[in-house]
Image (cartoon, rainbow, N blue to C red; front, top):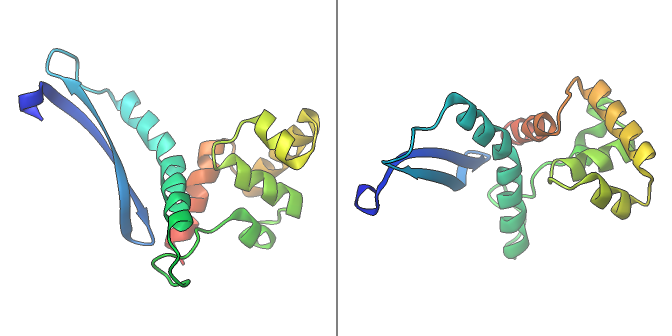
Length: 146
């Protein structure tokens, strides 16, 4: 990388059930400052969404029979009873972790923004989480326990 003038880098490695499924690498030139702790926190925050996107992409391109190496990733709809979510709250949570906007979710589910926000608030309250990125991280961690 040095021959290309790149000096500082951040890496995020995505895993699904112990398998490395991809990574994100961000580099800066030698004439720029090194990455800060805040930069690393931002990469860590988007990491679960990247991981879920890679899992979805892999599942959409594979035609092999179901097994643990190509099993679909876990969804909130599968664990809703365990954490006390309604079917609709689980649908909302599943769309939130894929990075969809409120407008996109409202369009897909046919609900208004106030209704969506009620479902989101209830999902956060029941799960004990308070950010969309935390929902994604929670789901990613549950995937690793399968």
